[in-house]
Length: 127
Image 1 (cartoon, rainbow, N blue to C red):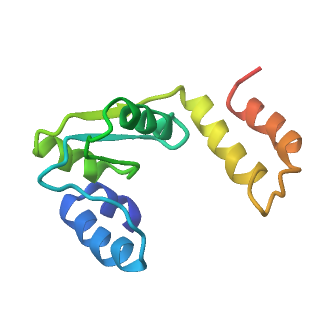
Image 2 (image 1 turned 180 degrees about the vertical axis):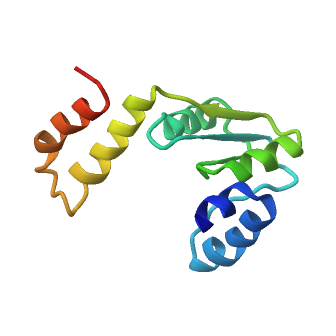
């Protein structure tokens, strides 16, 4: 519940970003005066692909991406920064995220793919 509130509130998100993420040694760019683009979306929706595509086409662009929260969208829109939110069919994004987490992680050892794939496909209504 607290995480949801922080991810939606601009002030709390900025505070969390600087206190938690930045002080953990994680190098992630945040909005600056020279930010010209914001790209985000639900995980496993093509975020990384689009970011690399944009960087290849416009090598000097300064963009912010991959926050997966509502507060950064609000920040970008309040600063009139062009914002692209990627969308993918929910059943595809959720099943892809599930399979990545549980089938390709060290705890799954990569061997659980077949075991979980059928369950995910049934739960998401994929035949």
